[in-house]
Image 1 (spheres, helix red, strand yellow):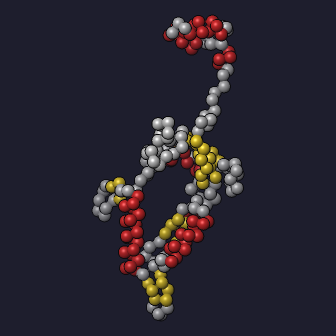
Image 2: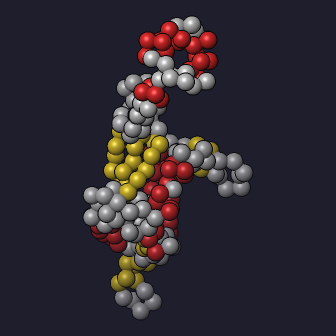
Image 3: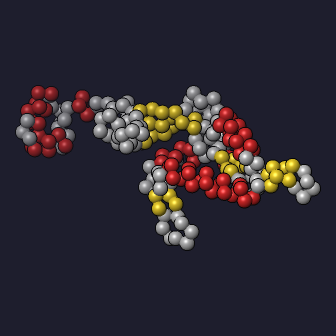
Length: 203
């Protein structure tokens, strides 16, 4: 049934009766044909690199607001920032806008309730994980590395040759790290004498 715009407002003025009439199809065609608002219109766009493999495809990530590290994840409009859409970056020189199923499905594990958002520690023999700060985690890792290096550092081999090796600890870097970051990491661990060095891309 077609009604004019004036009649439509008269029907809606009746409160619940008008609402019921609109749901039954008494709305004008022009109102029903109104375009839906683009879902990314007010989203915050950020560029990211996929962390799955060494291809390092480019991502465009859209959230409800700009992430904030100083406001406990809340934006200036009192809305917690949440990622709700991921797509390939067409301007990325590597992937040209393409994403594999793993990269395209990153939205699911980013918003997963089981995703680890902070470091946790489980003491030897314990069955519980204890939440610790990033400072505590980094300090503990540095302390354990220092202790292990002091105990297992090899300055000379059995033939008396200087080798300066530390073989009891290794490092596994992330696949999406830049060439510059990878070079600095390699120089750092090599200066410590560390021999087992790997990259997540080869896993």
